[in-house]
Image (cartoon, rainbow, N blue to C red; front, top):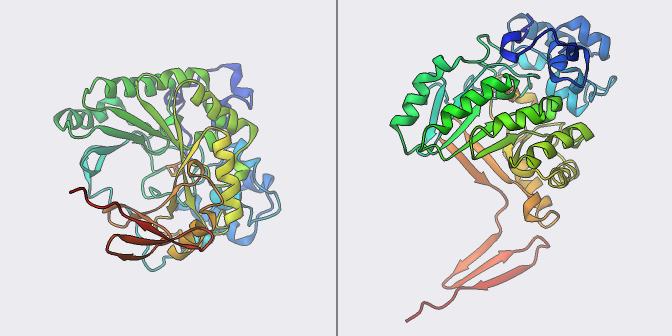
Length: 377
Ligand code: SF4
């Protein structure tokens, strides 16, 4: 099954730029969605071959932009980029704790395509399409499933809900990847959100700086400014993804006044080494992108081969503490199953607490007492 993204949705024309690999629409049109095309680019192992056949049948679909495919090691199926985008037959395996909808989003849908799990924020699912289908995706149950970009008319119920609930002040526009929609559609969506006074800021969640950096054009940056307080939340998982093109894409966003934050998902075989994470987080800060969360992978059905135990993340944080400054060190987060909300976890630095004195363990392992101030009389 191939899932071409509708030309109208992308704003595609017969423009000769479509033959230019530096053009994002070219990248989308030439995304690899079939086994022969993938075999022409990579030497696949048996697990990948079977995994692709399954994905193209009734599994979670495959799509890989030529740019992202170019980051893959041609001969190594354990390449950290390949593990993120090439299906493997392990996806057919159901493990203990696996869930179809790990964050309980369907149960928290308050209006069509609008999910609310916290009192002050809501998630707007603007499309089901992405340029690359990440094999660990939390929304694999619906992403790539059909329907494409949701028309504004379809989202009207969501806008009405936001108008009627001024306590929702923070809207995350996600999907799918909202930045595979056309500039005009993105601007229209953000203009609508800007007209809702109680929505103070909007976060646009997109992996395009990583998988399709050609998408971050000056025109797109202008379209994003349709809301006065837009933040871009992206998703670099490995230092190999920090190419000159992806760094330039982040620079364009920041230079247009759009803060960029990064959420890394902790993935077995991809980034579960302290040296890999250190290189990634330093590279992000250098690109003016704040490493914000290190996310424990959600227990999505068919992803157990990519997940690590909680203890791995805690140990990695212990190794990185003191090795990286505060702006380069994200919080380790578990998004609890069932949509109960995020919980920060990490090593315990409080060793003992007695009246007025707390004993702390430093990153060097020294024990130091902190004395509380006396209560003013
Ligand atoms: S870009 Fe985001 S929504 Fe799309 S497949 Fe990747 S993780 Fe899922």
